[in-house]
Length: 379
Image (spheres, rainbow, N blue to C red):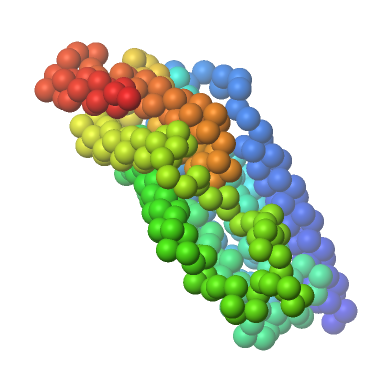
């Protein structure tokens, strides 16, 4: 009888080991599915499906609670492999499949591609963080106390990030499509603002450098009398320091087509930032609530394709702005001009999408967007 206890303990540990491995395998399978580009329509009809936001909210709340239990069982003594296995089996058969179901029933055509992609992104993060927590389970030694303070801090840290990821899913129901799109538009506008500020700072630095050169000093304020140049074994005066140190190339001194293009680009990027602010305030924040109806059997909204089209335009401009900045830093006038034209065209396309309201009708904001398009098109 006495020998049965160690045997049972070893059996429980072996069972836990297999449960952890199978759970990680399931997570890996789901994560791979979420990472793969989603090109096919849902495999099951969503006519009578529940609201995916409700499913996500309920499931994430349950997973958060299960994570708390799991964390306590890992930290506290005595270590009970059977109790941990029970929780993991529950998670594997309920929470994890339910998260994937929520992604599946979030039909991109009904709820918009951007919301569907946000589902995939946030669910994938939850799965990855939960897998990290599973790595803290001592599956090789039931007597492993993980007992030092550092190990406990690691376990608590993993628990915290799972909580945070679950909270992000829970919050998605309140955010809805409006919250997701507004946040992304604000982030993209901030990226454009940062790139424009860097370009403006670079242009001003170059202008200051030109003034210093006219005064007969280099950018470091050092003359040849300091022993850097000359015939005493110093560095030759015609040495190209930019090629040696890989520093950014400098704008041509005085007026030039590239400098003119730079000044024009900075001015137009400021206008584009204003466009983002207007789109957020005048269109996105008043998206119809019917887009996320409590009834999943409600008809598909004609608005969601328009939202996706607008989001596509708004997402292109920040990356193109980065490429525009790179072209200027490389003094590539041709590329800079092409990037500039691309940015202006995409911005005009975005403004065109929101000239009418979400019902497809002109309103008090229509003329503002038309005036903006005319203004940004001016050379």
